[in-house]
Length: 198
Image (tube, rainbow, N blue to C red; front, side, top):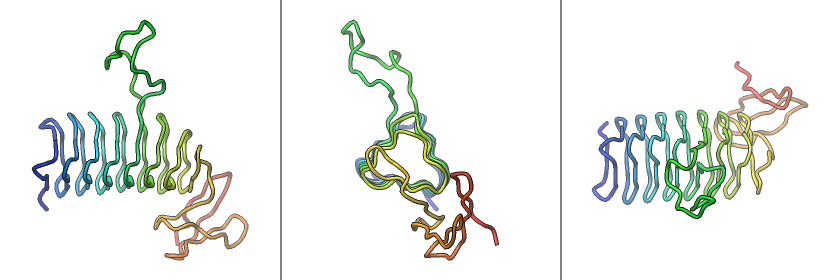
């Protein structure tokens, strides 16, 4: 499948765009960004310099993905969500001079395979959102999110578990959870969860 970049998108010649990917109206993809195959970058979204994305990622309209974010395969970022990159944001140095790129250290957000970040959520770097985890719309993530966790609120706190399909898991017995969409079972041990392979 051919790569599709609309004329009104701003994509650096130094960016690498995988086969079958689509970059839509007013989106910007900066220098040295690496997008995998079949990625979608929505209207007005921003992909920062050197951001790395796996295959089949979907970045919704007006999401902001600042470098040095790393997104594994199958990551979803909802509309107007933000992945930050500065622990101590300031426009000026202590002496009053304007900060330049060399005056601060970029820190990034890492999203593992299948993770989802809801609309208008903010991930405050440096944090890792685990595999298949879901960040609810409007949440502010300030610490790492375990695999399969469902987090919500400001600051985000875990409120449950989700399965591969994204639905909230239902507890069937102590330590055992079930996906209402797929009937897959998940086992909880020591504050983590894993899919039970049949």
